[in-house]
Image (cartoon, rainbow, N blue to C red; front, side):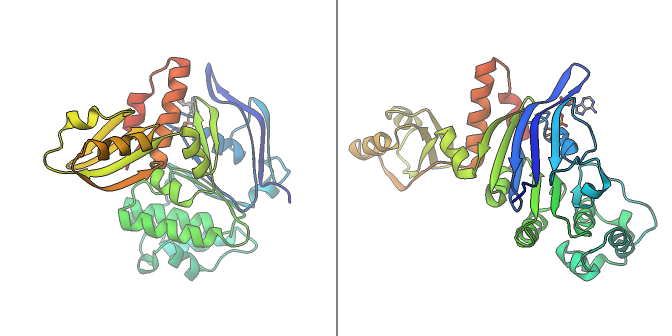
Length: 314
Ligand SMILES: Nc1ncnc2c1ncn2[C@@H]1O[C@H](COP(=O)(O)OP(=O)(O)OP(=O)(O)O)[C@@H](O)[C@H]1O
């Protein structure tokens, strides 16, 4: 089957800034791909290249085998970009119907309102919706043409927790249909963890890791031993355990990062530390993201750690 998107040695330069640098990737139809990376990594630029909104300085982008600047290619797209302004004095339903009219096989108005959880706002003026509701409306507009490829650039910014959960549920169920391909960016790594089939980790315009969530966690090579420490266990006791790379305390919950979880566990038991509720895990995608990005930072001698702390949201 023809891949949905092929990037072949793609670079994009803005003045002296290499926003995307020699990126090659093949994205199969029907996959959900999360582009992750710190601010300025090149995620939005990569999406605008795939959309044909900007042109590569080098290399080529193909969508279903065609150049994405062609109208015939773009009809496959549904898009939710970061900054969008809505027209004044137009109702939600009117705007959705306007978008539906652009396509040959649009989804129904009621289905789109339901998908975006906007049924009760159908007759409301679009610009009078809250920020999170406007984001949901943009999702309905992106889905209006029943797209083969959906591009979502930080789709849940401004949504509250329940809207975010609902959004991903609708997305997961709609994504499974018709082999739809989804390319998304998010700084909520827990969301990428839950929904993406494939993660492309970007840094400095390059793809620095590519694989499933499980692959990415394995590649980061982290192991965590978590437990609840009894009242007499001191921070020094935990720090003195063997093979502890880092120990985080949250109340009495302790999480140790280590490459030798068995040694840590044996020592806790051997030293008769008062601990319970043990768990060994590979950690969250966020842990892998931070480790891999820091490793690249060390490799090039830059200073990403502070930026990462600021950009990764929980
Ligand atoms: N139109 C432009 N002109 C000049 N530089 C640009 C332009 N667009 C992006 N850049 C630069 O290219 C780099 C990559 O930007 P991009 O917006 O693609 O990053 P991003 O990973 O999407 O970041 P964020 O997470 O903050 O949205 C940044 O250094 C940015 O300043």
